[in-house]
Length: 86
Image 1 (cartoon, helix red, strand yellow):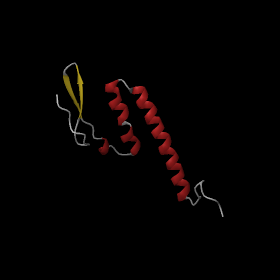
Image 2: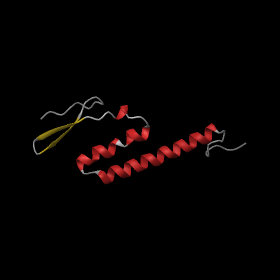
Image 3: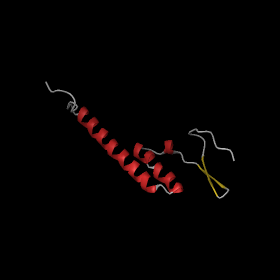
Image 4: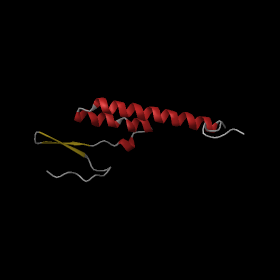
């Protein structure tokens, strides 16, 4: 069995009991960064890795929300917490 080349356009292949399954998901077509990040949970289901995928997704959401909040503060004119106020 040949593996697909690692490319965003190439489908992911799974091999289980000599049955070839092809998964194609266009994460780049899904609007919003968190929607695209959620595909990790979809793919994890095929490998029984849902728990690990949920942890990674929740960490991604927490980082995204922290960056989003920092960007909102910067847009409001507040200096980042690492800078000295003058």
